[in-house]
Length: 116
Image (tube, rainbow, N blue to C red; front, side, top):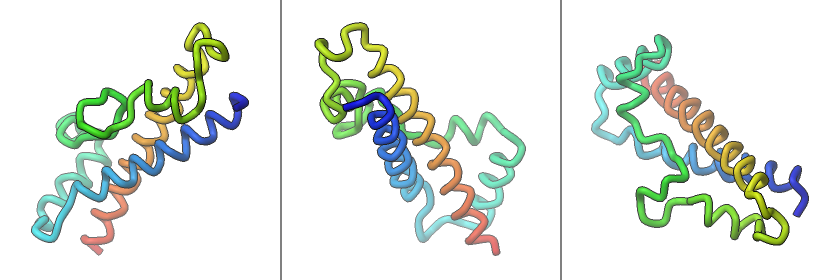
């Protein structure tokens, strides 16, 4: 797979992971106060809000989560076609950036929707 295609797939997969993770932030019992607090924290860049929520990453902290190894397998990055791991590093960064962006966008969208 060419690097451009790998990065495109990594961004797509990261967006999907971010969107899916955001769907777990709120539930049917979430109060308007919670929506307001999180939305205000996002708008003001409050570190307490940013550290309170679990943005998807490649740490493998949770069973079944993606890791650099699962990306390498999914994007067919082997020692023979990525000996220094540079392409995998680029893919991992693209995945994590896309996951974070999608996560925060969706959390904000849902909070605004419930407050409208």
